[in-house]
Length: 213
Image (cartoon, rainbow, N blue to C red):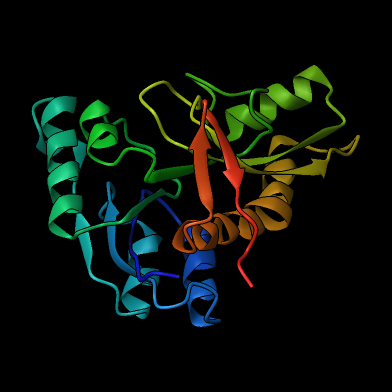
């Protein structure tokens, strides 16, 4: 496992950031470390989580920039300056453009709170995903970790985990269960696989290589 610099982009509470930091503390990421947390929200609790781990932080607020292109360039430049090997979108709720994705091809991962290709794409974020799932009456939902490409939620899938839907679920209870039973497990696992150089993208799909030895 080669040492990787991990940058995490956040906007809110940082539960997925915490799961990565916990995996780091357990030694699951080898010598790889979260070396930068960028927040689009100056009040995000994720910044406190980062500070508690001694991780450098940067706040880049969309309204401080004239347009998405200028904002995306600032994000890209911050990631390049930090020599990021892996970029994790962990509840990052601000739109960025292809400048970032092109600078880090197959090096940006995101977690989506549904089983892609269901309930994904433009407009499906936060509680909207779970509202749509419950409206459709699905019996299982879950989470998907995927590489990020310019097209929304369309990058190669890395990991998925199903979570049962209950008859009395609300969007809030389903969101909470998917976070606890799927997201908290998948995100650090995907980061570890990347750090171990075990994810190969071929013909738009990922292959997870077996661990050597």
